[in-house]
Image (cartoon, rainbow, N blue to C red; front, side, top):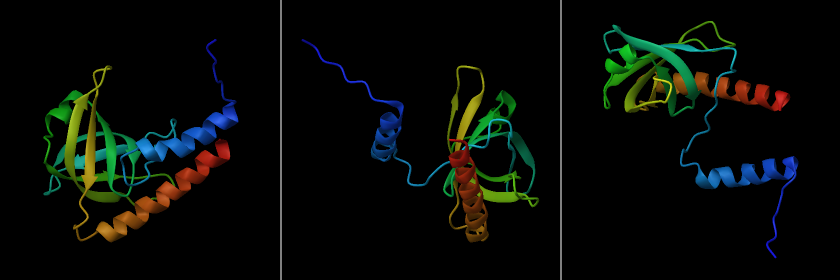
Amino acid sequence: VPLGLRLAPADREALEARLLPLFNQRRALRVSPPPRQRVMVRVLDDTGERLGEGHMVNLSVEGMGLRLDDASADSLAVGDAVILRFVVSGSREPVRISARVRHIYATRDCAHIAGLACDPDHEDAAHTRTRVGAYIVRRQLQMRRRG
């Protein structure tokens, strides 16, 4: 006789919280902006020229996922060094991150997702990590309050 196991929602959440670190290969915690607060990110080259723009998908102290339209995706290539400029909630001053394009892939809805890794050797890296880290903590607190 086959037996099934059904977990209660609270048990399921606890199980997922324990299993996620085993399967998540990222070293740093990533958060997504609130669904109603889209974060626009400008992508610049090292001279400050605009290459494109997109919406933040997720952010960590080590990198960012960025949703791009076709034109913005076409202006980037894997390996490109870029500067990401954006403003997060709780801050008036724009954040500037030096990063490198790690991958770009098309989605089913005809957009593109770019994975960008922060440059840890950039002169402003420590300051940027502090500001991004503060946003991540604020965002986690918001999610816990709602969850």
